[in-house]
Amino acid sequence: MNSNFPLIGISGPTASGKSDLAVELAIDLNAEIINVDSVQLYSGLDIGSGKITAKEMKGIRHHLLSSFEPNQEIDAWSFTSLARNKIEEVSRRGKASILAGGSGLYLQSVIHGLIDDTAVSEQVKAKFEARSKSLLHEHGEQYFALELHRWLEEIDPVSAAEIQPADRARTGRAILCFLETGSSIRELQLKHANQSVYSSEGKPFLVIALLPEREELYKKINIRVVSMWESGLVEEVEAILEKYPNCKQLSAVGYRHAAQFISGEMSKAQAVEEMQKDTRRLAKRQLTWWRNQPSKLGWNYIDIGPSEGLEPSSICDISALIGERFGSEMAVENFLKGFLEKGSGEDLSGQVFFLPFTNVKL
Image 1: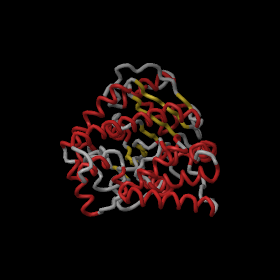
Image 2: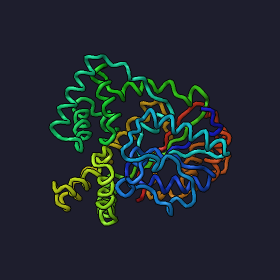
Image 3: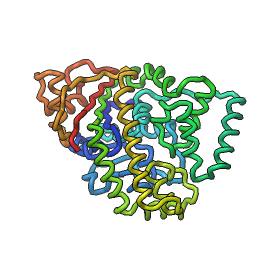
Image 4: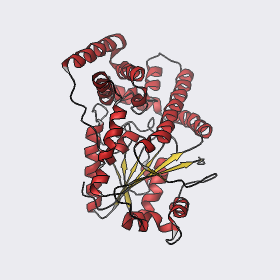
């Protein structure tokens, strides 16, 4: 990549306010936003994925959002290439890029690239194909991706926590990698992280992670799920099923619950309750990832201190805390602009800075 700009990533668990913060920062920084949510890549998957609306975008240009049909499969390799091309495109317009979304692996892949996990023996491929055919025969096409993901959870829970059940390609690759090497694909990716694109090209990367208190986040998730059903989640899934009867993306959290209600497998009350439960589980896995993985990736942890009551809705809230870490010689409200322009006065070459905002009000 030859982008002249450092990058800013905004991530965290589902329902933590990533999209709103990204828009506010993009307005202040004259930036554009690149989606790094693996479900929001697809058109028609709007309500159940919590996709930002045109009104909420406030005129900020978004990329890799609703860019593919639900019957297409976009894996991490393809996404990495697409995202890096978009970064270059945005840079040529004289703007910075903000990567926003809940997939830590997608964000990591842009920074560090991905390992080559394609060398798999014929014996392992045969074992994988035999088990896959058995799962497909037993559970059918609609639930095959979910059962494949459960297999991954059994052998490699670390990788399973980062991969959406609907992402059959990534799930399959993670299983093959474990069967071939006996190691988690995540562990191999962490070793590979030292060959960071940003390290080799001397570009800094700032990651802002919103990590709300768990109980508050769970309350918001429960309310949000009910709102999704009231806003037309069932109709959204019916429209997808009509066009793509065996759509693999409907294995994602939320969509599979509505599909099970439509098929008569669950009552509405049961589907809503299960969706709330599974979304909370997803959020818990995401919180765990963000609290454990950055240090293993060698990202520079910035201790910004307690942020009780912080509502990170503007650049000033965040830059004030960041400014305390980097010193008062620079106006704190200009920290992020300074980061993009000249690295805030410090040598930030080839470094990844990680800012975990905890105790965030929702």
